[in-house]
Length: 448
Image (cartoon, rainbow, N blue to C red):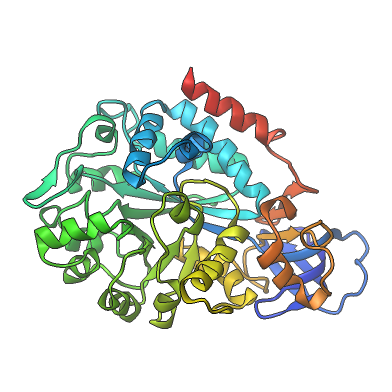
């Protein structure tokens, strides 16, 4: 395969920023990283700004993007927001979901995101009947990611019940019927038909302890999915914790721990309302946590104990979840700033640590351990953030990471390379010509 050279004006190499770095790429991988290359080599692709590994959006619900703006009207809670989310879910078909997801994933690419973890539970037709292809909705997401030029980990989700009560679990009803497979065995039979491809990893998820019961078999689920990334919404709301205690006499974390669920390779999403014991359990197991600060504040969920989780040994990753905004730099910054508000102390994470959460640790949580680093042998996925915008201009080059993490936004991303191929050039998506129009059109189609 031919060798392509990218010359980065500045590059973040995991711990620090280096000026003048040549990234040689062959067959979708970084073949070499050469430092102290003061001028672009002949024929090199030039990346002006700070080049970082591609960002990993560890938690996404693509169809939630259709709610942006709409759910910012009026007041309410997570539970009132959920009813509006169900309305959007009711309108989607495989074709309209493909169109929407293609636009959403293109928006992610423009934000420097090269891999997404799609927490996918919208499986069936309205009323709950399967499509002719039982994985038609999941395949629509996989195709959308390919069309937008990014990698996807499809976290196909088992969702069997409508909620917790003191006596057990409520049945699915209304829009929720689209989510359910009827049983854990039926979910597994459908999930087993999904196949990995060059840009695709197949993971698995339990929606939450509200949607899966002990009778459904936590241990059996864990055994069946032991070789893939596994995610779960965990303790996002106090009401979930209270209902779990009323039924099981323990927290959701403790319930899952009883059944051997936690291990390296499992990721709890949100983990907002955790006890000290819950935090120790996740850390001891080596399980990860995906923080979604912009969604957690948009839904008034609360501030999760990110610093305590990391001190306990839990790797942290970041997600845009409901896509109130799609901006992994904002997610990284918000994790630090939320902790400052909680503690009234600054400096819980360095810029380098926040970038690791947004890159290498996120890719690892999605089953791409060979991505998220600018080093020989890694996947050639990287993004370049401008250092001359009104937000980032001024700091000296060695402080470029601080400027990008604490002041940059998705709007400052100029170039994105995935698998060695330029997907975004000078702020323009190369595969989806007008991303804003694609978003507007696909969202309008759901209202028709």
